[in-house]
Length: 127
Image 1 (cartoon, rainbow, N blue to C red):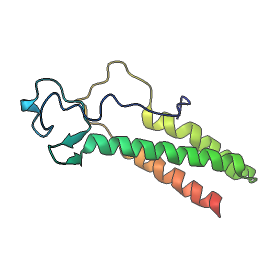
Image 2 (cartoon, rainbow, N blue to C red):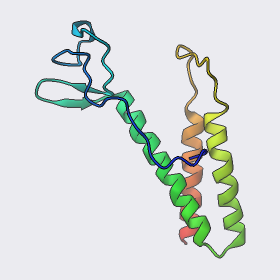
Image 3 (tube, rainbow, N blue to C red):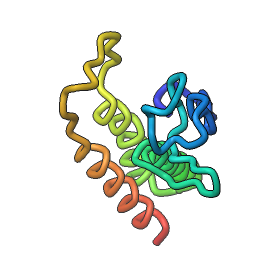
Image 4 (cartoon, one colour):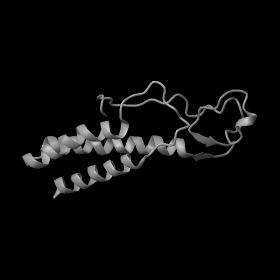
């Protein structure tokens, strides 16, 4: 959202690493890239897939706020929405780091806090 993206791509939804199932990575001949757990007869979501869904939902909330800001005639609400649209992505994502350390525990409460702020402002603008 921060960079004007309008879509997303995912490397491979069904790549189990050449295994019959992604439930046991040790059975894979290659690296499994699927964000879900794929069995022979079923598919179960996992934390990776839930994170993708949450990211899509967050993008949609920001898009809804942007649209509401463009339509409102209330200058104060428009200013609040525009400020939040500028602040939220930067606050949640921070600066890009090319040496991201996946082993460091991340604090995800910022995303939840901003999600609630966006939804509260959307409700206020809908009244």
